[in-house]
Length: 187
Image (tube, rainbow, N blue to C red; front, top):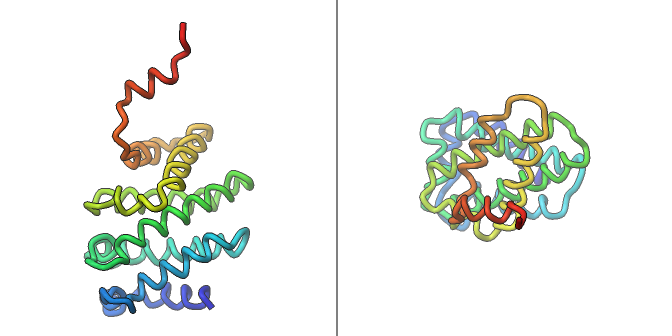
């Protein structure tokens, strides 16, 4: 049922009037309900159904962001709980996709992960409370940021812009010199 709803929303977000009515800043907010349903599925689903869910959610969010004027504002600063839940949902989604990718090494999954990374990066730049909004999924956030950085550094090819985006997403107040000191062996 959720997959059918995601397919429907994916089709409907092509129309500006529909997008502008997705967030209604109440308990009945379509985006908030979509994020909650997806979060529940992300936590329980694996394999192929997780890949379909992930692709659809990213497609919907990227369509809202790319196709509609002010779409990123709708996602990030709606004045509704959906602006918080979108960050948490994307973090959980890309974390789960990264776990699947690490077992399969499937390039199309990596492509979806990179789309999710780019979406998180844009949201981090547009949303004043981004760090607070990913607090409830901070464990998955850290695993995703560190895990994807390792994956991209180990892959052939030019992933410089993605690695820079990951650096921007590392929003923890840790001095780089502390990291370097902990990496050095005592001599």
